[in-house]
Length: 128
Length: 128
DNA sequence: AAAAGTGTATTACTTATATAATACAGTTGA
DNA sequence: TCAACTGTATTATATAAGTAATACACTTTT
Image (cartoon, rainbow over the protein chains, first blue to last red):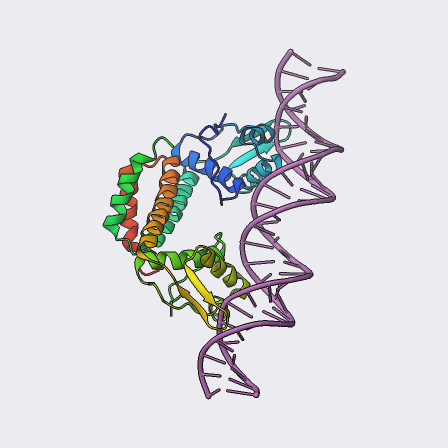
C-alpha cells in the first residue's frame, strides 16, 4: 500500500495536484513501484482530511495519464514502466529547476550564489 | 519607467501574482529602485494583453504591502528602502529554494545530483 | 477650458478549486 | 448470503481567479 505519511499540503497549490505529484515523485524515487496498490478514495480523504471528491479528481487525472488503473469494487494500483518513469523524471526535474533558475535570475542571483544557497539549505530542511 | 520587456506569463500561476513578483524581484536585483514610476494600469494591461482589473489587483496588493504608492490622476511609483529589500530578498530566496529542494528530495535526488543538474541548466536557459 | 491621460469603484460573468450530501454498482470477506 | 468495503456519478454550494464593460474622480497637457 502506497504511503502518504510524509504528505504535507502546501498552500497555494491545488491539493489534487499535490496528490498527483506525490505519486509521480514516488515513482521517480522508486519508493512507489509498478503494481503497488493505492489507498481507497474514502480512506485517503479521511487521512488527509479533505473531501473524497478531491481525491477522486487526483485519481481520475492519474488514470487519464495511464499511471494508475482502477477497478470498481476492488481498488486502484500503479501501472507504469521504466521508460515512462524516465520521461516523467526528466519532465518534473526540468520544470522544477527551470522555474527556480528563472526566478533567481530575475533576482540578480549568480550561479555560484545559487549553488551556495542551495547547498547550505539542503541539510537544513532535513527534519521539517 | 519600469520595464516589463522580459515578462513572460507562466501557466498555472495567477498573473496578478506574477506581476507582484516581477516588481519584487526587480527590486531585489536593483533593476527597479525607489522612486521608479510604473506604467499605467491601462497601458500595462494592453501590453500584457490582460484585463485592466487584473493589473489593478496586482497594484493594489503591492500598495497594501507598501511597495508602491499611487496617486489618482497621476500614476504609481516605487516606495521601498534597502532594509525592506533585504527582507524581501531573504523571503523570496528561501521560499523558492525550499520548495525546489523539497520537490527534488521527494524524487530521491541527492544534493550532488541537484547541484550538477542546476549548474548544467543554468547556462542553457540564458536565451529563452 | 478641454481633452487625454491617470487611479478607483461597481457589477456581472466564467472557470477552477474544494466541499458536501447522496446514490448506485461492483468486489471482497466473514 | 450479506455486510462492508471498493469505484463512480450527480447535484449543490462557496470561494478565488480572471475577464468584461462601464462609470467616476483626479491630474496633466495642450
